[in-house]
Image 1 (cartoon, one colour):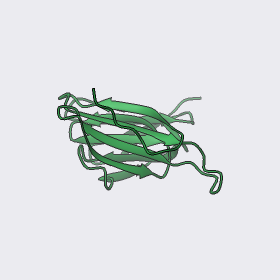
Image 2 (cartoon, helix red, strand yellow):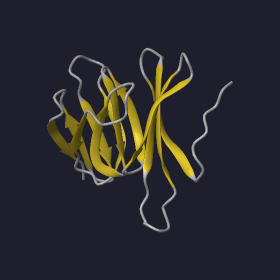
Image 3 (cartoon, one colour):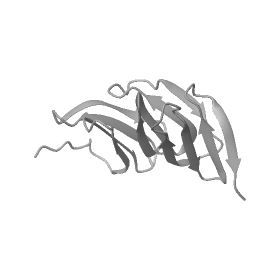
Image 4 (tube, helix red, strand yellow):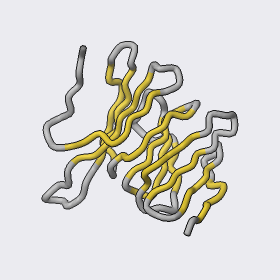
Length: 143
């Protein structure tokens, strides 16, 4: 078996996802808070499972806390109020970024139908629903 090791430092993997074809996997997580700058940063990586190859990786502004593949890409959420959509194999720049109601997001779910609905929730009593165009459709409040 072949393994890939991260650069030196203390970090963790908080999320992983495999696409429906079984050919692509993504992982995301964070790194221990930096003593000098006082903030944490995250990472995101995409692997081609058939060839066991790391295809793309990047640092993120915040810890990645949940991932899910959608029909045409990858959706990530983390310790920030944004939902980001990425290309399946290229994580150099997000394809789109959508604002969320929660300051930190813990969960993402994507529909498998043609509707392409995305639901996210986090550190608030709100579930945000987005349509296939990336616009927020509705926010459900639970108290």
